[in-house]
Image 1: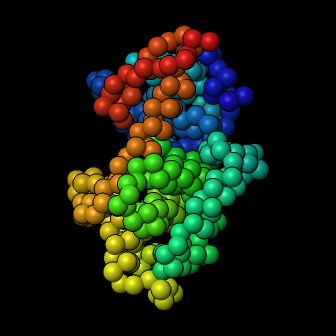
Image 2: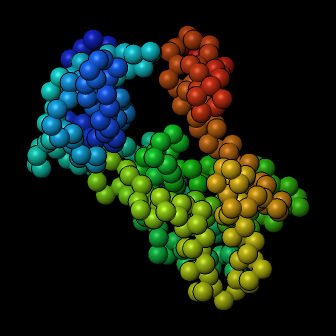
Length: 311
């Protein structure tokens, strides 16, 4: 059984992957150590506590076997663990704890390939063929984030398709459509090196923490540009600007802010895809008959209207 199959107050025994683990202290006098954990069963993440902790804590990116009770604190489900141990190899299948995109990845990739075929600019077409000729498998598997949108295998491909579709909707007659769509396809390519999904949870790589996906994406494109004789320096710089500026603001992680029409469109398409994903997730979790979602912290902590939710 999965976490979703249990109700508040029920006891749970089973295998869980450790995403985060911290030793903290209670407010008692004298204070006592406890474990503050983030666990996942491969579908749902949940906060867990081990009170009166002694000894070594569990290791992040490993599997533990737990006995716990499902409780609720301040409206949020959590596990109160009574016993746990590190699981031994052979007791579990590692990949079962990695969340997976809910959509067919081959169909998503086919949609993206159809879009790439329509790019007429020879230089931009070359850079796409070069990048995906080497990194297709990583791109199809990579998550889009550690948390929130696309935090599962295939999340990067799903998000990229969403951004491309938003760009096509937003593009004006004056838009350099080949440049915009190439930028949309490659805007998060650096995430193939940002994350490591070879274990039982998705973690950030050293290069991901040191450089981030914007820097790594620009490095990938620059490296592959040497193979593209039809890609001029000016076109390459315009493409790199899309990657560099797609977060929109310096304080949001972009080294430069959008300075072209295509850069403005890409930034807004990226934001729109993420926000609509968060809204869809909140609406999907809303009980049938309810007209409003719970507050969505990542969308200014607001509640949103749920239409057609009365069946």
